[in-house]
Length: 186
Image (cartoon, rainbow, N blue to C red; front, top):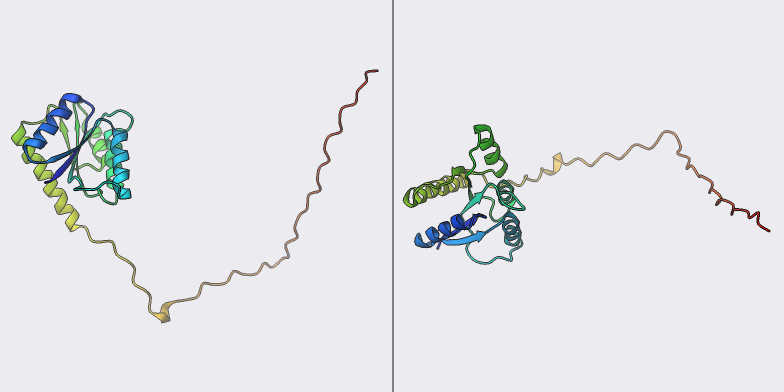
């Protein structure tokens, strides 16, 4: 069963998304704030979380404690969730520049406005985003390890040059403690 992640602090939207996931046969991994989501991502990276990992994250932009774009950025840094499809959602109207900033900060695949599309249209859109992300991930080359140099090309590191003038250590004499105050009382 596929798994999707949702981070949404609005209870009505949270509940509707989880209900749709259930209808669609998708397991929901849900959080009501960004801090919970980041803690879970860290547990995934440590290997503490078992089971199928989500292939999609739906993140509200404005969340308590840790924002949606910050959660997205943390997902991208994850060793196990870094290739997940990320969709940012918001009820606030953003300028085109703000949209680009939010998407760039989260490294998101898409931004959607609330109210979200009707159920069938939403499913189709999310499936397309997931497939596009999978295609991008498959097209990325695997990390390369530099090949060893042939023996004739290995040069020993040069030795540091000896100083031309001798270095004399500087010794600072200790400073005596201040004298105790004298009393003038009889």
